[in-house]
Length: 141
Length: 329
Image (cartoon, rainbow over all chains, first blue to last red; front, side, top):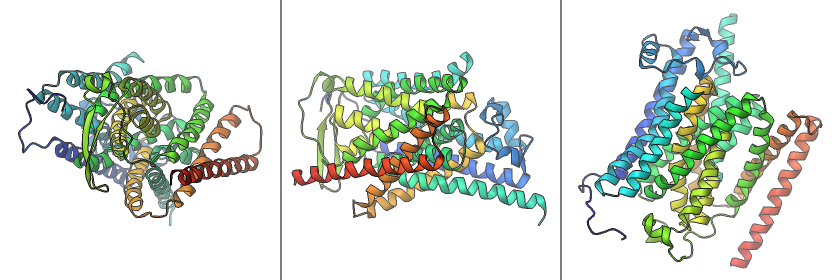
């Protein structure tokens, strides 16, 4: 309506709303599967990351939480290889965090295709904020 | 049965009870439109004895799960306005960073009671616009302003109930942006989606149709919560066992809630849910004041005051709403 002239549309068979919808759904499913496997591992092994199950499930303990998890690729890889329940839950939760972000990335594709420069910039600012919160702020604190 | 076995069963029961609490929060959150986290934080702190740091951490994570879960259904129907969403997320994500850093400061100084008090107030205040919503499906037209054109706020969707294509033009983008910043701050500070504030921003400030507002707000909640979650993660506010149970429970509950919502014909039932929420709101407020010894009362009196206040508030809103409907019809 406002910018019909000169707008390049995506090919008809590429339905961005549908892709976004599938991305969200598979993200949630993948995340929940990892979380459930993590919980099962904790109960089967009776421990996670060297803490016994009573410590793991004690939510008054302010020392055993997300801070003890090593988020490096090698740390996560080792955790998963050792079938550490904490690391399965960690992967599940981070898949969940990245799921809505992937839709912003998808919207960038649409804005590029539509040559919508204003919204392209705005979407990039949103991504910048997200990664600022993830990568920069933890190093400042 | 030996000791190890019985303690394992006890922990399994603990896990399941949190899942059940999450389901309850998810159902209530989706029936009232406030989102699961708004119910989950009071539930975990007041009834499960979870420290508020971990309760907000688990809630923020659950918020992403429910947002993504229901957004997957909405975006497919092409009601969600991605442009409005992305544009306003600039403000919500900035707000979420400010809010979660404020939370870090608050917890570092052991000022937990402030979070309780703000949570109670936000919960009670967000009930008012939520109760009054839903009178008009499509807003009255407003003249497009400079921001409508610059930020391309025109859109349309197919309304299945009205059986027609609805065209709309958003206005006052700057005002919505301002409200969204505060919505982001609240989300980061309290670990909730603050959907009520987001809806207010688009409903009232931008004059968008309710369906567009609700679905777009839902889409934005996930990204706002993702921003806050990463800061919560590095600060150690996420107790993995608790967050896992809560996320599964709330996700399940919001699916059940969405199914029930379609079937509820008697609108008056919803007033009971609003009653429960205002009870939780007053309880949070009082708990904060008691923790800081501003208020010294027994716990029985605390519950009594919450009950009376909740009944008074919901009664007042109910009467006001009924009268409004009579005038409208």
